[in-house]
Length: 90
Image 1 (spheres, helix red, strand yellow):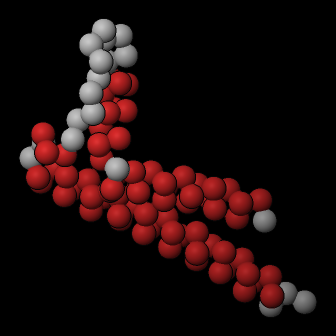
Image 2 (tube, helix red, strand yellow; image 1 turned 90 degrees about the vertical axis):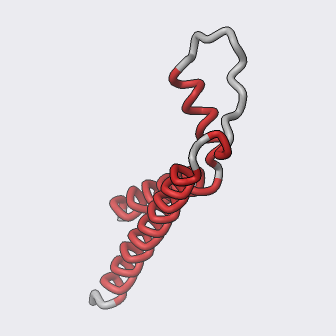
């Protein structure tokens, strides 16, 4: 049962990460800029999707949704397998 909790926690983290990759690109890009340049004196403004080509925003949106869907599906299958294997045991 502890393995199931680990799977659920990892899946929840991946769902949140996928959501941010897919739909919160401005926040994600500003965090990435701060990580790349931590000692910069200039304030790191938010970098929007409009400053990049539209193709990059679309790729990130598709990748984020795929990560969300895979994580949710994996957690659902793991919970269903655990539920039905426990209910059939004597």
